[in-house]
Length: 257
Image 1 (cartoon, rainbow, N blue to C red):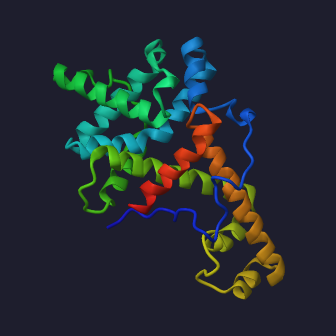
Image 2 (image 1 turned 135 degrees about the vertical axis):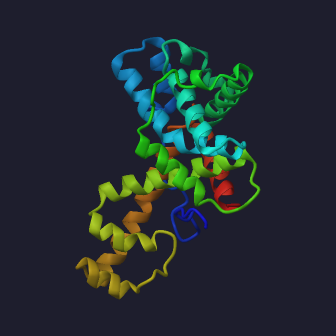
């Protein structure tokens, strides 16, 4: 079975690389800035922000560990231990934004962690007894892994793919919160093309609008999708000029999924 993901932007939807105006101010809160605040002062608030950030990357990194050949239990222990180590006071100080994308920093850090854990050969030390995620959350990650297609994608490619899917899921989640949930569930099928499972007329009847008003709502939905897409990517890079390259890479990853 394949893991289902939202389709990438198409010609029928706004181009996220150019539809939204981005300012330097949008980069005031990025994944790197969260890391920087922890490195500067590990306050309760900054560590909590990093904790939330790490949860966004849990599944892509877990998939990477599983694809490296570790069984479910070992992969859970190793991923838990990696994040526990990352959240330890002072451990994040080695993070250097100049080294590249945030997703690359995390993956490189995980690879180093796996190499060190292999050398130790001591499973008991892998989490230091700390549970980063709940049992239900870790089981959910394994369920997602089991839905993956039976392909031969390299672990790092699988990590990037799951990261890209996570970005799209985050964008759609934000979009749903901004629009009426019931209307969004009907109109989202038109985000990536003019042909949905139902016609414009039927969609209009379901949302209680005229067909013209429905088309206007779909247009606004597409425009806002492009803006949120760009904003979501801007949080993962250090400089505004890196956003377009990262978006192009994300689309490439999804197209080869």
